Image (tube, rainbow, N blue to C red):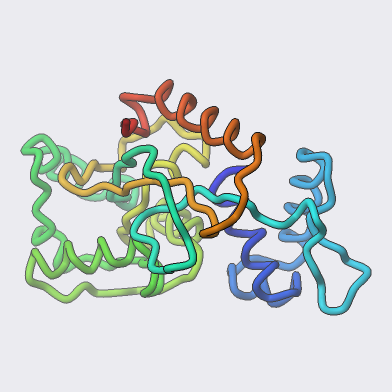
Length: 231
């Protein structure tokens, strides 16, 4: 299960409803239902009991551990840092490509050149929005926010459709199976710390320990592309 699949599962679990979760994620209910059915088929288990009202998680659907970006503001959660993930500016295709490439080469991206551009941003409360706000503060300008969304996939797709600029972790780019980096620009001095998180005091099963081990090995194998391993 990747980060985006986990986001969808969490939204349904929080809302106890496919329709409410779909509204929160800004996608259609049939699309979300089909997505979860494919995920359940892939995992070989049912994640939700659809016979109850409201909807509930099955035993298999209960989350023991999660992969999350730091910081985690919850004293009930303990975590183990496992990697560093890079952050990219997504530009509308074909806009300012040459000048942005020159800025990227300097290894210190100056956001002031984007002060007159439109931005599509995730709503406040997300780590990537905190990073965006810090970059605007550093550049000393208030962004022209065209759209705020709760879904990072939505902001990525809208930027790629030419509606404005946005910021995403590189895992979002990889999730959409693209190796075309022509309109993606590395923010060299900004990154995410990725961690395995679980509830304080919970017994961590052998399977969970094995999952953490496999995750670390997978991230190490991607060194130089998306992730830089920690430890």
